Length: 262
Image 1 (cartoon, rainbow, N blue to C red):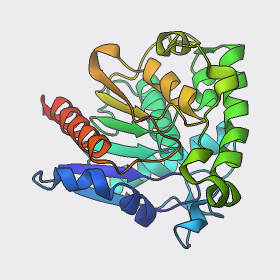
Image 2: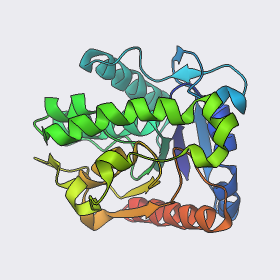
Image 3: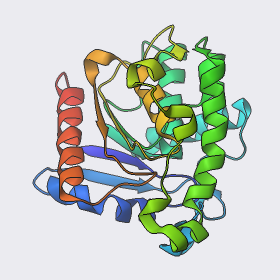
């Protein structure tokens, strides 16, 4: 089995490999080849990442526009054509944004062709709202507000100074916007003309400022083919035994579901 691995913005394939080592240790009995690709655009470090990892750092997108997203999709499509096929994709943060955009654009534009990968594991990431609106999804004003506020909150809570002052306590999520809002209510903030149809796993943390974005991504995927797991932390992959085993089991499930019909 081959798994394409898409890292977060301002990190790298090597960093992503380190970040996932704890749960991948529980997959050692599986015949899985992980492809740790670097994004095509050199960039500065993600907030706080330089406290733990040195350069180089990369991004999958040059800018924040629909045109830039489509350029990233073209790059990913060419990479998969050259280096694939892949049974699944494992993604974190910006990687989720790219992978979900690729699936949505493919499903809208070339639905008769096989998808870029057969199963998807999304960790601490959400969809591109630019792509959703382009494809006819209705994104509510509240979802747009949460997206803007959460990006600013992530920069603040992930910053190196916050790490040094507060450690894990820096993760406070978006309590002012998310208090009392259920997963079901968040998922209803985006109306779907269609949904991502392959098996998906959604791993997000209730203390992550981008929590709502992860829930929004879950909501645009087929509810009969998805699994959700709240790891309880921030914008990170906790290394506790329970979290690691749960993510590993979810990956086994996704790959098995995705490859069941070939």
